[in-house]
Amino acid sequence: MGRRTGEETRALLLGMGVQMLLERGVSAGVQHIRLQDVLRRAGLTTGAAYRLWGDQTDYQRDLAVAMVRMRVAGPTDFVRAAVADLVRAGAPGDDIIRAAALSHVRSTTRDTDDEAEALEAQGFLIALALRTTADTWPELKEAGRERHRESMAAFADLLGSLMESYGMRMKTGLSVLDFAEAMAAMGEGFAVRAIEGIDHPTFDFTAEHEAPTGRWTLFALGVRALVNEFMVPVETAAAQA
Image (tube, rainbow, N blue to C red; front, side):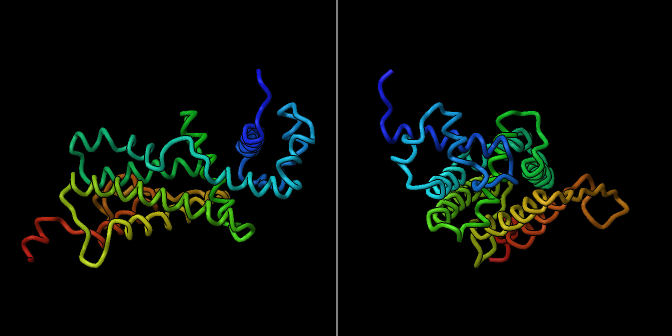
């Protein structure tokens, strides 16, 4: 095997650092990933690293950026998978909301047997924790913004397709992106609560309750409220025109 280039060595050491973050979890933070430990795991000498980074802080900055940019899957892949069969079967809109919201809640609690989904969930929570410290480095702030823009574009596309399937449109003055932003703010808030160890509230409503019947997560109820405030059926809008 030929000698690695500097860029290849950089990618290797950042990849090792990301792997260590994923293994240690949200509480570790990049400050607990020591460059010496990364080099030892990679089987490289100190000189290999210090030709690329001036010191450990420089490495940790780039590691934080790499972690925020890391994705196992696309931003909406697991949500799409959670609702795909329901949409094809023409399930009620409330069922779509509950399934999609539950997928997000599972991602914040890592309550899944699917290895890829569990890894994406771990990465999401670590990236979220790092984004809350974005003022540390300008590069980290921009990486966080880039991840957010990518996620909002993907969710706006998903929402648009669901609205078309269910005959809904945005109320005048609002956009699908506005809905995605509101939903993301709420979802990330619940994710922070999960990091803090706060259980996500779940409700079982019957016909005796004023709330919609069935099992609902609090996030699902919030999304349903957003749907009611942001959207209107197409036929209703046409009749009012």
